Length: 141
Image 1 (spheres, rainbow, N blue to C red):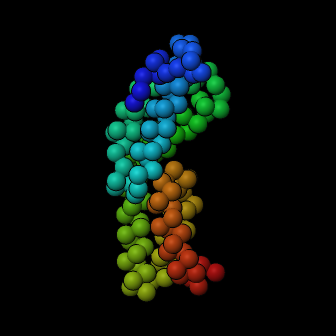
Image 2: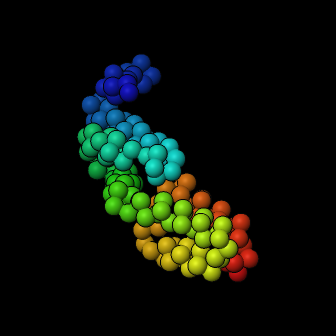
Image 3: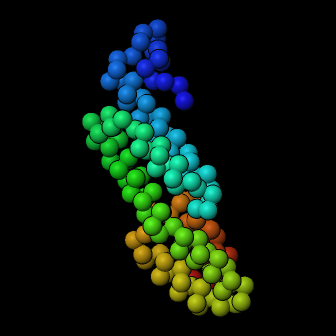
């Protein structure tokens, strides 16, 4: 990653404060890119946390950016703690649907969706659950 203090904007060196903020923005973007690589199993949560730990804290001076970073850190922590049950659920639901146990599949998905942890699952994992719901739309009416 290019060192922010060496970046020039319209031919002028950036101030140290601006360079630090740009560095945090770049690191935040790198952490988000790592998060969206795919399913939970493909994520490297340790790498994401290491990237976030490299942030210099200049983001804390900007309420919206601070809020975004803190929410993202909560998602990472939640995935670290609760991510595997979400992956396991997808596998279980797939097996239940294959066995024709639609009521049990519906119950498991509904139970999972009502859990607050669900909002912290990766988009890819959410889309897998929605795919199951769409494929079996009759069972969710």
